[in-house]
Length: 179
Image (cartoon, rainbow, N blue to C red; front, side, top):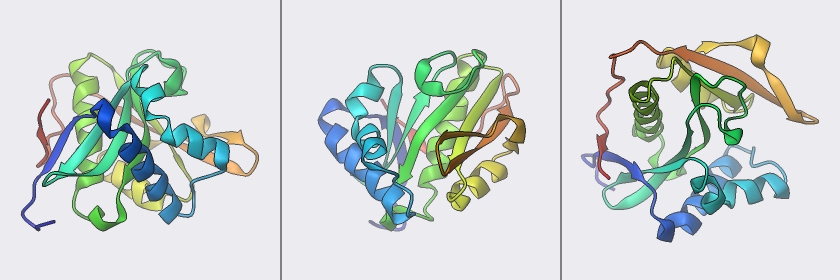
């Protein structure tokens, strides 16, 4: 990858689902936090997520180096009880692409989607071990919402974050969107 490569965010293609599943599992494993075999199976089930939400990828050059699942408000995959809020799930960036703005481009793209869809808030949960993601969210204006922290399994604590969306404000980044 060349340093001048621009991050391009787009919807995933069905032929990429296996690659995307491998990418997100690999990203979680490098953080020491892929979870158990059941959660890895969920991470790999890109086709299942695509049926209920939008699976997005980030390309650098022509290589898929990041992914996130955008979930409009009120859908089961959101894991939040707030129909006025959009959320993201399963953000992952390939280790070799970290520090290049890939995660930020994906999150900003999702914030813009939520705002354009008229959502009032953007909520997300992150594992306590994902400190780089927490720094990204806080840099983008997310606030911790400890009253919504939760534990989906013994020994696993998720931290809740919220971003109040201002209508008309765009969270633009250097990412280019193409469909």
